[in-house]
Structures are given as structure tokens and as C-alpha cells.
Length: 263
Image (cartoon, rainbow, N blue to C red; front, top):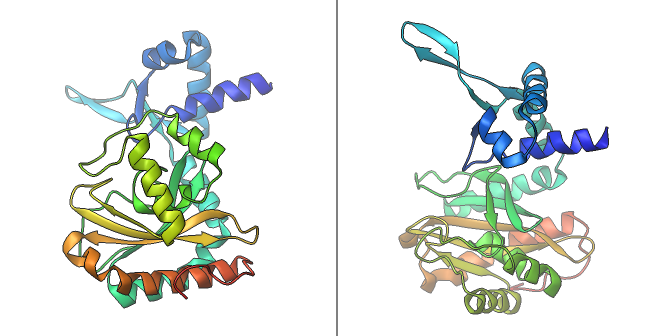
């Protein structure tokens, strides 16, 4: 039974932002699961609402597509999981104050294996195309809010991240070991990360760490917008507000030490 569950979960993890739909034959090629067995998995998932097959137009008729997509049941489960992350409710009042102070997008991120996972976001009143949205992932080496978390991880964790293939998301994405290590050391020393065109061209983000009761960094908070709204020469103004916010959230999480930066 455990092997069957493992196979089923592995099938679901193949549905990603880059590849949101799969045909039966594609899944069979990737998983090496026999098609009859795979078909039974897909039928069960579809019956339960975990997967769905949309209707498509074929001539004058609507027919079921041969593509499978994630179903509405996962949206429901995702909302439950999201609401169970206590830090979201703790951080929201402070995020709102930060957004009102600077009128920039405010983002909350948590570590998840070798990625950063965006778990909350407040949009700016100034519409800006950003890479981030709730539920989206970014590798820990790219983008200020992911990388500031990486800066406070163990050397073993950092090495695990660096062993993964790296992707150039935009012109400023650091991809070499030297670049990433320099950014990590800067974040650890200075208590913030600053990124320009790392995940989305033309956008800037400033992020600071949030400390938990165990004094480890599993979360960060950032502000983001276009470069003209976040010029590097004015970074001290933004850092004052970010550090103050991160200190308050850290205290809510049980961090009993003085926040180590800027205060």
C-alpha cells in the first residue's frame, strides 16, 4: 500500500508551473509505470477531483481532452494548508503597515527544501509585473527574499542548494558559485539582500531575515517594485522599516534575542 501511495504522490508532483498538463502516454514515458496501471491512478484521481480532464471543442462537439490537469480538490487542500501556516496571520498586520509606509509590494517567504516558497503577499497600489505570487517557488540562490534565507543556512544546506542545476531567470540572476557565495556572505554580514533583475527583468527586491524561537531563519520578508522606486542609494530608508517589521514578527514567533540588525 505504501508503495502504491508513493507512486500516486510522485505522479502528482510532476504537475508543475512549467508543465501543468500531461497526457497518459507522456506520464507513462516519464514514470515507467505501465499504461493500464497509470490509467487506474488517473481515473481514481479524476473521480476524487484531484485531477481533471477539461472539455475541448472537436468540430461541432465538446469532447474530453486527453490532457490531465490538477483538479479543484487540490485548490481546496492548498487553501487549508496555506491557512495552517501560523506565521501568515502573525505577519499580516505588520506587512500591511509596511505596505502603507512604502506603497510597495510586500512578500513573505519560507524555506522549502532547496526552494523559497511565497506564502503571503500584499500588492502595491502601483501595478508592477513581479515574478512572485502566493504559492510560487524560487530557488534559494535567486531573488533577495530567497537568498537572505540561504545566507543563514548551514554549509551543508548551502552545498545541497549549489549542487542543483541553476537557471538564468533574468539578466541579474547569479549562477556561478563565486557570485552566490559572495551574495550569501553579504547577506549574513549586513542583514539584508538586494536583488536587481534576478527573477523578473527590471524589478528590484530588498529582503531581511525573520528569526524563529530556535534562532534559525526559515522565513524572510521583502519589498519589491521597479528599480526607480527602490534605488540603491536610498536603501537605508527601506531597511529601517524592514528590520523593524522583521524584528516584530521574529518576536511574535518566540525569538527572545534582540534583533541583530539595524535596531
